[in-house]
Length: 400
Ligand code: BGC
View 1: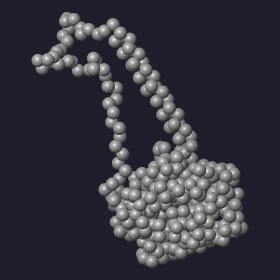
View 2 (view 1 turned 60 degrees about the horizontal axis):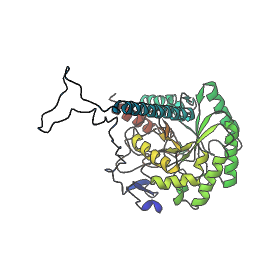
View 3 (view 1 turned 90 degrees about the vertical axis):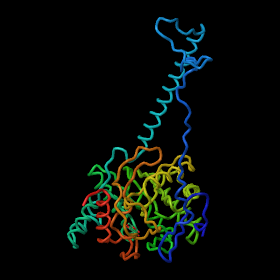
View 4 (view 1 turned 180 degrees about the vertical axis):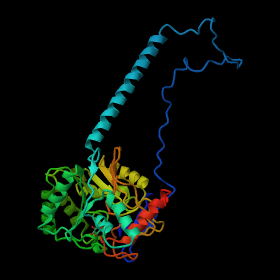
């Protein structure tokens, strides 16, 4: 219900489960947050040193060699020198501060200078050598080459087996000298009635998260915690309990090497201030930050701007942006579930930015969002979609 009210000038989306669409509401496409930089004159000279003076008759007085130089007062030179020296010192101090900030960001960004793990056992990798047409296998192979997140669901990684399964993947990634990215997706009332409904009861869920944390150990890894859980909370039976559960799950990673990003919806869903409030309540200050655009197709620029607003409201959390299927941007009609005409987005890479740490494929392209628009069950490999995503990306890139 809160999704129905347009707040501020931000786009608001109503999540309509009946027709499986997000419907854009109150979106003023013509009012991006185009900041107007303060364009003060930099390095303005004193009136004495600037343009030649205009005498009263309107002609320009020009100093010519041989003529006596325009006079300065006896004190003007030392004052000017002191001013220049002070300006230089200020500029030097500003430069040094910038260097410190940039190096701190670089040091804190877990994606910097690290290759991401490519799972040899992904759905895409298996489809690349499985049945299907040649074009479908070629598309699967293209997708399988790029790093994508590994989703941990209780259906695939059952309670009691999660620790070993995760430790095994971490060991493979370590052997490959790469950083593994996991998505934890098993919260109670997961997807609240949507296509990915399920999840574990509260206590079992937290035990399962404990297992995952044990499997991760102290090696650096990335965890995207519970896509949609917070942005969707108002549509779930007990929003407060849900936020508290995300917070408890987050706490379970505190002794591990995981850099955790809570899910932060996307730019066409909740207003940034509301998203920030939910993230704060879920303890984002104990995490590296939040993820945006997971399984959605909003453009990277829109997501970066949104992430900056959410981060501002939080006092500086970091973010990652899912680019798995956003190469062509979102469909005009706001569809999100196996939306037609999508294209692969930018492959994963670290970003040198105060807020956005990286863009990466969180949703594995080619896996269905659910039984909508002709797709199979959520998470199932869908060869037709894989082929379309690759073909559209190639077309946009001017290829075949
Ligand atoms: C599904 C998961 C799947 C994930 C990634 C979700 O919508 O519910 O089973 O792992 O998408 O494809």
